[in-house]
Length: 322
Ligand code: TXA
Ligand code: MG
Figure 1 (cartoon, rainbow, N blue to C red):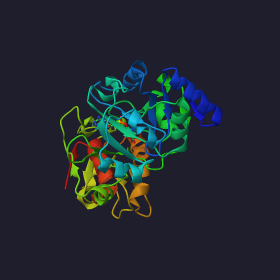
Figure 2: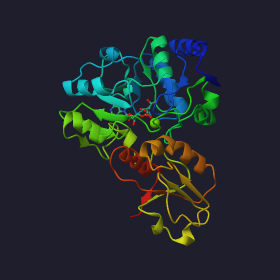
Figure 3: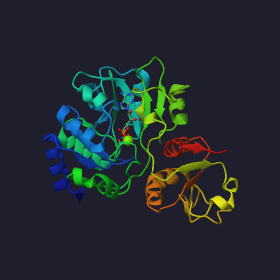
């Protein structure tokens, strides 16, 4: 059931979490499906509701950066610099795990992914629960992440007794993930804390690509995927007119030459890629329900948040032309 995030609802949600139940809640990136990260049985419910394979570890969410030492066994200076700058915010850091976190959370890995979300509802909920909260995105495994409470209820509604509504997510794509498990930092998933921002703080950052499971399951080639085939194109002109009937066109910025498509969806009328990222998943969901034969997505430059948009489009699709 969707409930407005009133103080009473937050208190009830925290009580549920403390009792080992799951609660869906908003963050600034996407909605999460939360459970007490120190309770293995509660975390097991999250895996089962999402139909998520046990090899795919969860992110542990804290209300305050000061709690980091309760979930991570160590934190190098470079990671501390990122934390000082970007927490609370859409940045997840992978560190050696503390014994308090059960193996089910980390899929047996010796590392744990941690973040402090920048959303008042998320932070109040975690603070009231008085424990770290393990939370994957609140979608069935492999599907597009939810950016509204309704997205969560539409797919997981029956299995999730409480979905806290905090409005649409401001960022709209999942957090940036940086691992500090190896000697050098590795970007495992691009997000709103961009590679350029990371490199300004750390110097050169290696971009992980196609790393084998289970270290980076978010990098499964087909992930965050709608049912309708998605094809990335460099430009609209590359799509023959015969392929347009019955297909939809998805573009971050206004496009010329979009004639002949069954629908044209422009994510940002002003061509602002942050706005486009915030609206991307809701648009993919809506188009996926539209009965189109194919979704053509126009590529964006791979810099700034454009890297995260392209990453999600690639995972949503199967082929790339151009
Ligand atoms: O923005 C977000 O990060 C959202 C909100 C709810 O906070 N959460 C999210 O969680 O996207 P999820 O479970 O959908 O994605 C977490 C990713 C997975 O790809 C997982 O493989 C990776 O984090 N991950 C978790 N623990 C890891 C670890 N110890 N080492 C490497 N990757 C890890
Ligand atoms: Mg996810």
